[in-house]
Image (cartoon, rainbow, N blue to C red; front, top):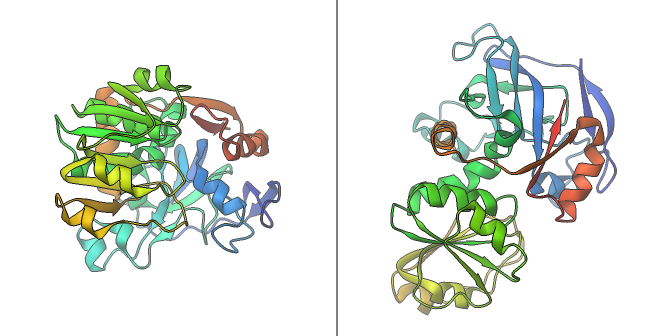
Amino acid sequence: MITAYAARGAKQPLEEFTYEETLGPKDVLIKITHCGICHSDVHLIDGEWGDVYPLVPGHEIIGTVEKTGDCVQLLKEGQRVGLGWQCNSCGSCEWCSAGEEVLCSKNQATCMGHFGGFADKVVANERFAIPIPERLNSAETAPLLCGGVTVFTPLKEYARAGSRVAVVGIGGLGHLALQFAKAMGCRVTALSRTREKESAARRFGADDFIVGPPGENRFDVILNTAHTSLTMEPYLAALRPKGVFVQLGASSVPMSVSGLQLITGYKKVAGSAIGHPCVLREMLSFAAENGVQAEVETMPMKNVNEGVARTRQGLARYRVVLER
C-alpha cells in the first residue's frame, strides 16, 4: 500500500490518499526521501492541463530502490535513484530505439495518468530511474530531475563554450540555467523586469544583468524560463545571426513571431522540455563535476499544501523540496 497526497479536483487542497502498488516485470518501487515542487505540479493541481483527478503530483523525485520486478537488470535494491517527469515509454519505437524516449507517442508521465511523488513510494520503469552520483546532495539535486534537465537540454544542443546566453526569469528554472550555462563556459546574462534579483543572479553565474529591453544583436541563445509568452520582437532583435530563442515555460498564450525577423539572420524559435534518460545521466554527472545544485527550501511532506501555495505565489527561493 502506498500513502500519498492527492488533489480530488481543480484547485482543491491535497489530502491523504492510498492506493495499491502494481509492479511490472521491469518496474522498480522507489521509497521516496525527497520530492521537489515544480510549477508544472501547480498547473496540474489547478486544472489547467485537464481533468487528471485524483491527482498525486510530484516528478522531481529522489529515493532508494525498495523492490525490483522479476526482469529488472539495471538497478538493485538499496540504490539511490532519481525520477523525473517521465516514468515509462514503449521501449521499441523509432524514438525509444534512438534513446529519445521523451518523443515516444506512448510516453508515460510520472504524475499524469500515474501517481507521482507526493507520496512515500512511487513505481517506475527501471530505464527512467536514474542513479544519483554519490557526491550530490538529495534535497539540492531533486529539482534537477525536471527543472535542471529542462534547461540543460537546450544548452547542450544550442550552446558551447564562448556562446552568449541570456536567461529570462530568475526562478526555479532560471537559477539553474544560469549555473549550467556558466559551467559550460558561456558568457551569461540575466534578463529581468526589476533589479530585485540581481545579486542572486550574479551569485548563480550571471556575468551581466539587464532590466528592460535586451538590446540588439547580443545573444546566441535566449532561454525563456518564465511561464509567460513574451512580446517576441525585441527578443528576436536581440539574437545574433543564427541565434536561437528557446521557450521553456509552459505558457498556453500564443506567441507572435515575425517571419521577416526569422529569415533575416537565419534565426530560430524552438521549444524544449525535460530530457531523455541518457541526457539525465549526463546532466547529473555534469552537475556533480561542476557543483551545480538547486537552492531549496525544505519542508516535511505533510506540509505539502504550504509548499504548493509558496510555489503558486512565486515565493519559493528557488525551489520547495518535500522531505520524508
